[in-house]
Image 1 (spheres, rainbow, N blue to C red):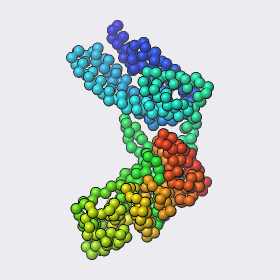
Image 2 (cartoon, helix red, strand yellow):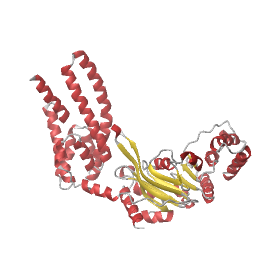
Image 3 (spheres, one colour):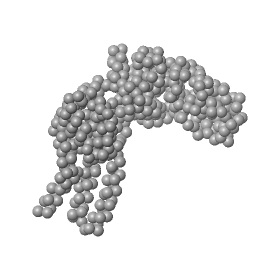
Image 4 (cartoon, one colour):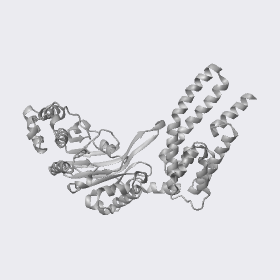
Length: 458
């Protein structure tokens, strides 16, 4: 009889997370709240009875599906450990039970933090969907009374969800792939289907999806997007550093299958560059020339290339100066020169103007404009785009959609971008597609869909 009762208690812990009457009653009220939310949001009501799946569906109703998978998985693990701890207490010796329960308690304590974070993320989504005040966060932060807002939103005629689950699914279907672009013999062709990583519990997380474009040679391109939109991930996929489910072709050659041959065709300048302050400019250039240029190149050819690059970026007058003595602008030009030594067809720069004032930044971008005019493709990320936007031909706008995936919201000329987003400045365009919680207008999905329709309609 005792074993039977223990099994019943174990099942109660797994299902309700507790065995006492008060805790079970609170969980039942929470289930009622979920039932009301599911009914109002267009989900199946019976899901409220299924633990873990219930939390995932609640996240879907909150437009937080990606968070919902992690939220449900963490709760499942927590309840499993609770059941294990319960049975250890009854079926092992007191000495071992105490030791094992200490370990289990430590694990569960570590689980509480991510569980609490995902719990609040889902709640914030519900607040947005039901257009409510964030003061309801107090109920969710305290955990126990979290059923109160769910029941209130579920019963109130004034509180109606701005989206229903089936409507969200249809919207995401509309944001489907609109087809690859044709491969160009000259220039850069990007047909990126997906860039994914393995997340918690080996869950597939999609970082980027459906990015297709063809950039002609000689174009200088601005890359825009809010935090988390996938700008750096996109650049790493393009330059072959992080492979995606994609076909990236530069001058007709595949960046992935011909990677070793393409190394010299791509120059990538990160935000920070490691250069020794006690070396001279010319020594720095020579050291990097030994790394960047083909081994078959003669010394004379190498020296000629170094002189050409220093002349392009205005470093000839300071070639004998120590790196540590250079101004901020000169150091930036030196870090760019290092990557330009290999004479790349594609030149990518991540915030090359960070730390520079307007005049110095302008001078730097004018030199990059001359690089593009020589027939190269130059792609730049900058957080101050409007002060140099007139130097760019095109703009790529990446947006983080409602599933928290980086999508292509626009690619085309600067002037057409202003018309497309109905905004004059690039910073205002970014504000249009940023999430509401990031201070934006939260229109990412709308513009991703709008751009897809533009492409489909030619």
